[in-house]
Length: 400
Image (tube, rainbow, N blue to C red):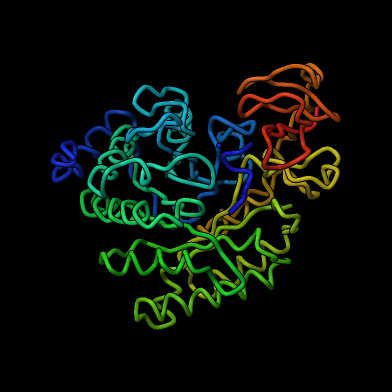
């Protein structure tokens, strides 16, 4: 799905037989806590720890009672290769920034899951030779951070690649086997019918490999959706697909089904308010679904103005809200009661970056301002107006 995610971003396999024990030992050494209940990992909203103006997870925990975060995204290196990186640029092996955030979360009694894939960038399933090599790359992430949970975000364009999906599903199965108790979610595109042809092929690949994760989640947005009713209808239809694919009864299918929404304004201009989220939450809990999450905590705060001029942002929701309003639904799904105290308001944005100039050549990471918003270049660009296309070279960093 075209979410402002990544835009706003076989010898080793021999050791996998003992990887479960290795992961636990390394995790404890790096400060891992005792695993939370599965319900918390199922309720973990997505958070980009290195992009899209990352919010302070400690402040979110204090304001909402949230305990788990879904950190995104682990990809193959931008230049190619079968080693894990954050966003294609920051090697997991030498990371300290994400580790510091994880340590903060765990220090307050929480934990994280890590999401691999997403919409942008090259996925490890595309670059690694086979399922074992793909699993070995992901095992590095599990071991580095002492993970108790992992999310496979399998969507376009990767899920249109049969070999890549074979590698990803095969890797998920290996990790599940070699890391006892690992919570595994698989997230894919949603349609009005539940999921599309490629999503169904992914389910068939899982069936053929004998792999069953904790849940298969769909993302019912960016596909002509309009509020909660269209989303709950898609979840009902997806349940029927799970039944027919795996031979499950309705209750078993719901117990393996998840929802991953987009809070506020979606990339295609759909609007999902707090009331919509509450409706879907009621559906998920009444049907005993396994997962309820959303994209993203980076966006779970109000823009200035609240509707952001009718634009979608990676750093605010484009709807009227209080800070972390949508996160409170995740807390309720996990079975906890959010605190009633008023959250600390989002700080007022600072001064704008230097003004964009049509004649200047910008490289990836350069920052400019245009129309009272700051923008960051995703790649080399010249004479391309920020915001002219949401798939263009500029990442909206919010109002300034």
